[in-house]
Length: 123
Ligand SMILES: [Zn+2]
Image (cartoon, rainbow, N blue to C red):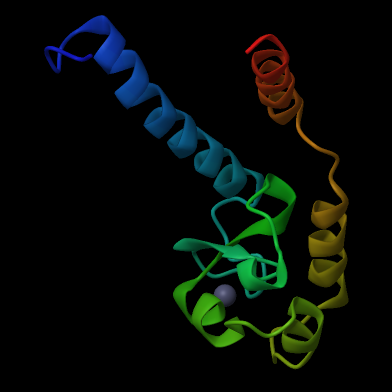
């Protein structure tokens, strides 16, 4: 199907999802000033607030920028249990995380979902 890596179709399929993913992640870092959502040190990764294996999603409101230590230490422990035991715990930051988790589904997500629904309906 793709004859050349520079063909428009190839570029569209190959580059757009990657860019979209990068922008998506970037927007989460920016919302938290590139700081760890827990201890405020520079964030190096995105933590799943509700761990993936506890059916935590990869939606924006379940992803929190975190520093290496927090991400590693938290591991698979529930955010509430883990964070409240940390020396850097503050109620203010805790509420901020809780607010973030309540954020409604982004418009972009809905657009994607609707397109998918259309595709399925007319397939
Ligand atoms: Zn941290």
